[in-house]
Every structure is written in structure tokens, then in C-alpha cells.
Length: 323
Image (tube, one colour):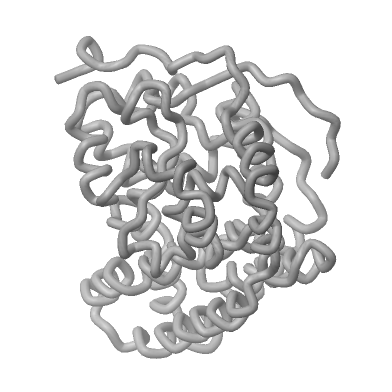
């Protein structure tokens, strides 16, 4: 099994992304969908609870043996921290406090970032806008792997390594593909995060800091929840570039599995995405969908037709900068 049997380039298309047209059609047919574009009243409390749980875990791991620390970082902390990155994703769409209170959302994302250990929220927001506006856009959508990743990670063993290293590629890829100037919010994010890490170290020593970092790196690497990275946009079926997953892991991921629905209506919070499908089932029920994120990861590693190159790409005209 190797590159010879697999893909050697991306799937280039010369059509616009499908979500813009779908959005127009669906809003015309079902104006009730607009009522779902409101903040999630529970999000701020759920996220605050998760941050406090990880703070309690920091206190509890002080006396743990290293092997148990890494076990709990994968089994528990990895789930919480991965879930927090998906809360940050939801908050980046202004779903915690609404579009009228953008600054509240920005700062709350920085708060949600605290257990992750490394600054992430402000940079994610900066690039995620492009992922929606220029889905699959060459040099614009940094969710798409680089040509180097596609070329190198082409065998099962290498694809497995690529999944383990996923957090590193997600962090470094934007700097190579589409570097942007550092913003004031990113600087604030970094300073607040550094202060929090230093405070935890001063209070409880090294182990809690390692626990938080290990939770993030293991939870965003080869982990059942990480199946969503591959499930969302990797081309499992020719002609389809966004896929939904309706299984139980949505309960701990702010419904990120409802990904077709999310790209159709990015301003609708995760908690309301099942209602979109309920209102307009004929737009979703016939589409290909995933039933297991673990199976997604298995297929990605062992199916020759899948790999970092299994993505739809298009050349996008750069829109006016409205940020």
C-alpha cells in the first residue's frame, strides 16, 4: 500500500462552494431558520464548568505517578480539552453572547482557552472566517493540508503518524500557507495564557501544567473525538466536500458533527443545528453521512484512496476584507 495506489493531488473543482446557494434557498423556503440565529444561553455556563473541572483536575494530579497522569490526560483531560477547542469554535461565531457583543465573545474564548495550555482562541478566530468564506480556497483555507503533507503522509503508517501529529500541523500550517500579522487580541491571548500557566505552576508545580498540555496534544491527536477533523471535509465520496455525523459524540462536542448544517448556517449555535435538519430534512437526509468517528480514522489510515490529498480545492477570488 503506498502512494502509487493512492492520490497524488487534490480534487480540483471549478465551481463555487455549495453552502452559499443552499443557504439562500433554505432561508427563502424556511424563514423560521432565521429564528435559530441566536446565542446559546447555556454555552457560557457549560464552558465555565469545564474550565473549573480542569482546574480541579490540576489540583488532583499533583501526586499522581507520571504514567497515570498521561493516562488521565488522554482518557479524561483529552476529552475536556478537545471539547473546549470546539466550544472556542462555536464562540468564534459569536454564539456565546451574540453578534452585538463581539468583544464579550472574544474575551470569553480566551477564558475557555485557559485549560488548553497554549494560546489558540484568537488565532483560530482569525483564520476560521476564511475557512467558511473560502471553503477549499487554495492558499486561503488553512484547514486543507499542504502539498508536502499529501506527498509525505501517503502510507498507512505515515497517515497514522499524521493523525498523532495533527495538533502540530493545525498550529503550524497557517504560518506556511497564509501568514497574517499578529493582532492585539492574539497578544492578549498569549499573555493571559502565559499568566495562567505560570500561576498553576507556582501553586501546584510542574505536573498540572504537563497534564494540561498532554490533555491538549493527546486529545487533539489520535483520539476518538479527533475523527471530526477528518470526517468534516475529507472526500470519502467523489463530489461531496462536507459531511455530517449524527452520533453520540455530538453530546460532548457542541454538535460539531452537524457539519453540513454548520456550513449552511455558521451563525446558528451548535445547540440549534439539529433543529435545522428537523425543519429542512429534505436538504440533509439524502446526503452521505458518517456514523462513527473511529471508523472514519480507521478508513483514513487503511483506505488507499484517502489521505491528506483527499480534499476538494478551488481557486477563490479574494473578497473585500470585512474583518
